[in-house]
Amino acid sequence: MRNVITCKDVTFYYDVQPALQNINLEIEEQDFMAILGPNGGGKTTLIKLVLGLLSPSSGTIEVLETSPFKARKNIGYVPQYGAFDRNFPIKVKEVVKMSELKSNSILPWYPKEVEKRANQILEQLQIKHLADKKLNELSEGQKQRTLIARALMTDPEILILDEPTASIDTNVEKDVYDMLKELNETKTIILISHDIGFVSTYVNKVTCLNICSCTHKIDEIEGSIVDVYNRSLKFLHHKCNL
Image (tube, rainbow, N blue to C red; front, side, top):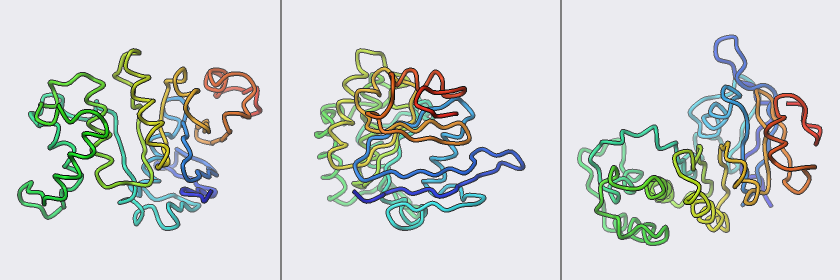
């Protein structure tokens, strides 16, 4: 498998404070990777670097064999739902099509192929019947599917999700992860998560991140992934000293 993301000795500073230090990370095609770590450990900063929204203070990042900025169009990003105005009166289909808006668009008019693609993705994610519903009328699980559908509109090679089940109850979590596992058949998936219970049965790699990083294949971890997460700030049984 080829590497789709390669970080070599990546360090990033906010002023004089290091947010990330000497990060070496390889993510292969069709990996399903969870990034675990404490608040302030650098998870969001790392994602911004991969998306080309920030540049490393030192080191290099290559995404899909080019720079993060050039590769951005081939990355689908799903932020936490809390980043959206829950009361904004927008319909599901319009949310999904938003990723096709150009910076110079005056009005949200879309060509027929965009409408067709949106319908296909809504059907794929089993929410086509919600196309004309307003976003604030949906359940949390339906909202998350809508945001994932929006990220899939450009048919990205890499899908990055920030806490995809943060607002979802346990009855819906498995449904979301099953859907991601199906998407993983054709796409590389990276998710930031504290939801270690479900994650451990789906991902093939775990990166523990707390300014520095350590990556493990799931089948190489001694003990459970819960141990990996709970001890990541002190000492992990699989010799990760984060």
